[in-house]
Amino acid sequence: MRVLVVEDDAETAAYIVVGLTAGGHTADHVADGRDGLILATTNSYDVIVVDRMLPGLEGLVMVKSIRGAGVKAPVLFLTARGGIDDRVAGLDAGGDDYLVKPFAFSELIARLGALARRPPLAEVETTLRVADLEMDLIGRRVRRGATEIDLQPREFRLLEYLMRNAGRVVTRTMLLEHVWEFHFDPKTKIVETHISRLRAKIDRGVDRALIHTVRGSGYVIRASS
Image 1 (cartoon, rainbow, N blue to C red):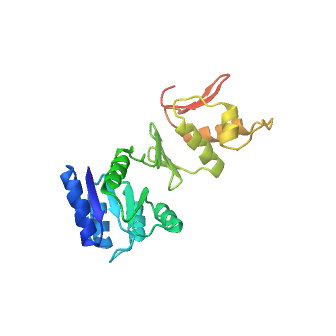
Image 2: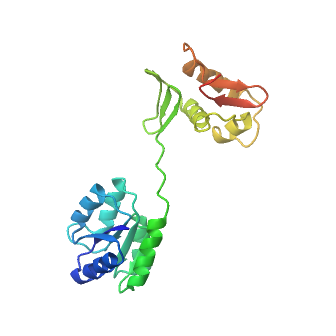
């Protein structure tokens, strides 16, 4: 287990580092929040231990900053500030656990081990692709090959749902619920009309159609016919 310890109290930091090292772990230590931010964002750690009151950059700000930079390593706040509001603030800042000083080293190592065993957070999906069709979920843009496609908001939602379920047949009822948020059948051709418009923008003028009707079942987006 590789641990980053960001603690400005020299005695506490030495206690933690010596204990981790004796247990066969690797521990890097810095006493300043800014140094902690630099190490956390330039190295890979299994767990990060952070004090709340730090010189250079306060612990909450440091953790918010590393989360903003995309660091997913679990964070344990180790601090003398043990009030409920303090704990909530630490968790809201991006912390995963909170241990109040004074503490038993056996509890610290148990908590660090539990955090290190957690499965890594899944990457947030920002782009969907089916064959040469690409959807940028952040920029709200759609491109087929080199051609950018202009979609209305409802068309975008419809295509997004199809692409998230690529290769699977989605029914008219599923589309009404997830795209239009209808939990009843409006008895209109709203789905069919939007599918037709979407096809005209996505599949017209290309050799391979991606949006297919499955007779009696619904629709599917896939590369093969």
